[in-house]
Image (cartoon, rainbow, N blue to C red):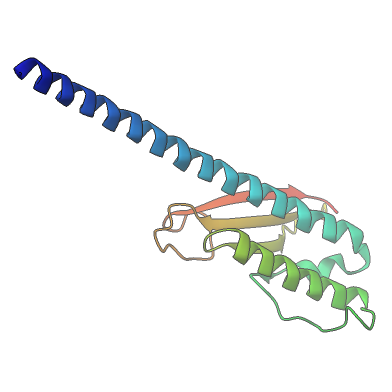
Length: 146
């Protein structure tokens, strides 16, 4: 009888270890998905800027979702298209990542290099902020020239 009881205890500990490994695998998979989405979104903004070279300077200073210029159906100027891109991209970042925030800035290095940052709260701890490394915010940074 004691042998059966010891076997059940050992088996229970093994199953708990297996459940812990499964949970860790799911968490790591979720983190990898967030990084993949952040990478895709950063390159999406870089492609939008390359497609609208006439107004590339208007993308500087994007910090989260912007307002919709309402010109898509009637035709946008290059500057309005930059504002629409900021609106659409910022909204997508906010909805695709937990506490997602996207930023674009001109590095002013004389080479026309821009920086795209995508930040999110990977641990879902309620972290907020506007800079990489604040609290538990994770960050993907892409430097490129349009």
